[in-house]
Image 1 (cartoon, chains in turn yellow, blue, green):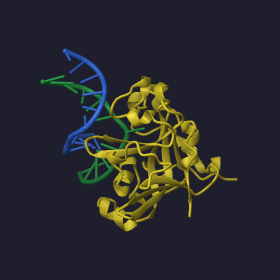
Image 2: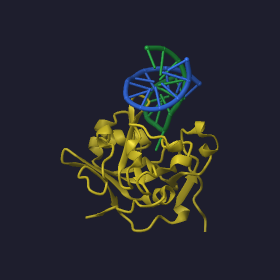
Image 3: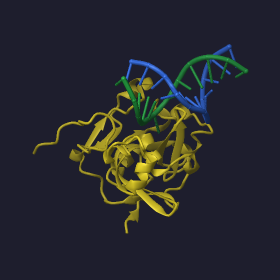
Length: 208
DNA sequence: CCCGTGATTTAT
DNA sequence: TAAATCACGGGG
């Protein structure tokens, strides 16, 4: 039985890298839906123009970003999609990690039902709104405590972060409005993994 | 490329 | 009250 991931009192870059390779689990109707985290983005709080908490902005929508590390921040966007973040750091820092893609591992038949447009297994959780649809994560889970909740949590499959050579860092997706902040390498993914969003080729495999 | 879709935020 | 925005996805 895998242990629950509990190290959320971290800065978002450290947490982002450490979440790669861990397992996101959703239990709904007694069924387990799960996948390995393969792509994430760090959002650095008030100073980060791309973050919902930029400039200390605090509204009803982003309130859970200001909770202490270990809570979920789930928001609704573009009239139809949900995205899930893992809040980290201390209360009121409003820093978080967006989960962008999973490699599905449990409950794939149910995910297929919830994601009729996905043509391959690798597409089921390939994108931040795809994975929430596949797992049934919506606004009802905004503010969930991932350290204690019975319906949504992260399991620790490995103690340490993946070796640096297996992680690729790139600019974040969909934040072009954020000026210089849109270029910073704050998106992290597992090199060569077929379930990461965007273009299929993510850079070459490291040679010795 | 283009657009659906609607809550949320910002401007008046 | 109205307009603009939006951490997206699917289809050409």
